[in-house]
Amino acid sequence: MNHQSLHKPGFVQETGLPILEPLLDPVIRSLTAEQQSKLHDWVGAYGSPLNAVFPHTIGINHARLAGVLDAHAVKSKIFYAAKVNKSHSLVAEAVQCGLGVDVSSRFELRDALDAGCAGSDICASGPAKDDVFHRELIAVNALISIDLAEELEDLLALLTDELSGTKTRILLRFRPTSNKHSRFGIPHEQLHACLQVVAQNTDRLAFEGLHFHLGGYQADNRVEALIELSDWIMVAREYGLCVEMVDIGGGLPIRYLDADTYADFIDAQKSSHYRNGKVPGSYYPYGGPNEADDWLDQFLSATGPSGKSVAQYLNDEGITLALEPGRSLVDQSAITVFRIARTKRQPDGSFVLFVEGSSFSACETWFASEFLIDPILVPAANSTREQGGPVRAYIAGHSCLEEDVITNRLLPFPFQPLAGDLLVYANTAGYQMDLLENEFHRVPMPRRVSISADLATVQPDDHKGASR
Image (cartoon, rainbow, N blue to C red; front, side, top):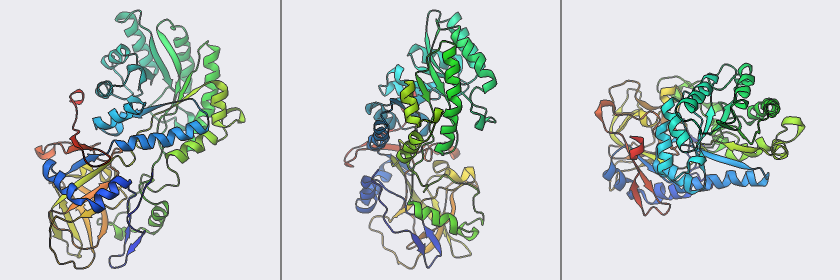
């Protein structure tokens, strides 16, 4: 994506704090820099915090991945991971772009269908699927990833007792040795038996392939898992099963800020940069070395099974590569706008900025981490103030919880923010804005709106009926 940053990286000399300027889609950069009155109008109409969603970015992100797959001539199937964000407009845009949808609940399934996705383009990869979910998936001919041997038994019982004569499409989810302590996937000591059961029930099961999903964001461990899986592909064929697809899940990384800026920050940060004096132990790689398309190119170019490149192996074996990207498809797809309700000077001269909203709408601190980009300060319309010098501040929510802190990191501002100013967090679509949102204190859920690429059309994008 054509990301742009507003400022050069560095430190504010007066505060000694680093600047972590977010990369911005050109549409969002124009909005935050040149059309700020729109932000005030939208918050005035819909409240704070406001999640503004930009569906056009899905197509841009998809095109980058598709370009890599085409360059390697790999047959592929991309499923948009619906869990990444609750916005119906993003699911609808993914379907409009020709993507399938990866669902982990019957509610995500219903939203995908409501968005126009064909049932045959839906993959259900979540664990602990019950009979109700299975029935709905079978009814629309969705692809079901079997997470454990017991699920396979339950599915066969359902096909025998209630849905006799129905043939159901499945993958078997493998647990790689490198991930042996995970609770997800079928361990290798049970996979033989599962393949045998599938081979004995081809009248009820349409076996399409194998699946794995790893945590983290390294391409190398996916390559290692594929090499391990290649032996099981041979075993499956010995049972007379055709492996048409290998699904490697998601975990394709994106970049929120300049890579050099991020590296410099990680090297230079210290406890005094945080209001609680604690440097978090881990972060998402916000300015990592690779973006999603680089990662995918590295994976396909790496040496895989039989000493071939991964791409060549897949092509030679006639296997479709399936991906379940979430965050990498919603890169730059949303911003979250908080309105400042009150400011409070601290004894050390820093400030607390209390916003209308809570950390449940910007949730990294609940995972003992930080969202490592600076919010963009948008002063209140027609406001007058003494400019003063730069100030240090952290951001807190409106609740009675001491832990309701949006950022423990002290942020540099060019002047003191005031009540009525807006704080705009960029790139919040990927799990950030709604993973933990709730109605604590009986405050209604934050509103969300879908905005066209020309900023001319603004439509409510709150949860559709299928999600309620």
